[in-house]
Amino acid sequence: MPRLRGQPNRAFIAAKEAALRLAQQKLNQSCFAARMVALGVAGANERVEPKSKSVNFYRHFLQWQVELTALLADAYRVLFKLALAHSAALKIEPEGWTRSELQPLINAALEAIDDWCIVACDEFPTAMSEFVSANSWRAPAWLFQVSAVYRGIGKMKKAHMPPSDSDEKLSAAHTRLLLTGAHRVFLRDLRVAAEFARDQELVAAGSVAPSASHVEQRKRINRKGREGREKLHNLIRTLLTKDPSLEGLEFCRELDRHHAKPLHDWIKRGEWRTGLTFAEAWANSGWKKKIRRVRQEAMKRR
Image 1 (cartoon, rainbow, N blue to C red):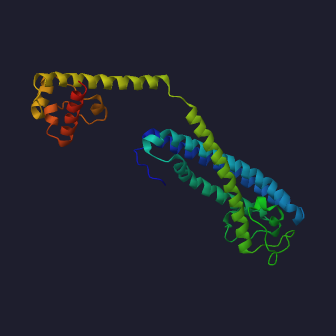
Image 2 (tube, helix red, strand yellow):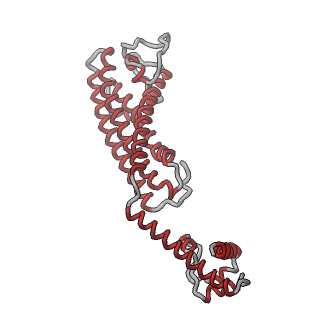
Image 3 (tube, one colour):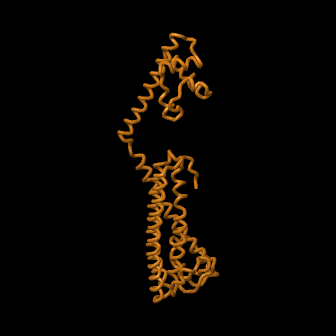
């Protein structure tokens, strides 16, 4: 996972966790409903010839795959939108962060796809189907009847394969190839849907103009900074007109005596603590450079 170089606030963390919980709940509901459909497919296929089973299988499987893709693409959109809104503060790359956060849900979806295939192909679906793993399962040959577009794999050599219109079991290698192909098709469709969601959110984010209140606030801050700097410069020019040799600690003491205020930027960044005087700040090498720079700027603008 990309490291968050900024400090995430509580609102961001809460929103992210809520988005993931909602996505997980929707995924669980979808997988449960799909498993019931898979049991129905297995039951219906007991009464038809092997050459007709693949039609029933893929009609329901592809419909669920579309639903699953839309569900995860929606989760991607929510997380990407959240990352986009906080990317500047947290210094994260929105797309990479979103993919990382979504990966556990994608892995769960891939496992659910394997489970659906196993249950839907079981001639005698029982509760024991839950304990059949993708590694030990052997797919029926009729799964190879559909187009390679749906399988996610190309043409196969049939020398070591049973007839594709039979109930014979495929080898472990061919079964693994079928499941890998199903994963590949799902991930391809999900990538396309996620890219579409990403582009929509980027367009929407770029189309929103800054609010009037935000613009006015920035103007006030900038105006306050300019006015503060100009007041300090005017005071410095007045002091140096009276005594051009004034510098160092004595210069800082004169600023304090005339109640000079530090620059607005110093206060805004939290560098100038409350109660600090110019004379005290002069003891710090970093502040020495800044005070000298302000003195030089004031004299240049006479």
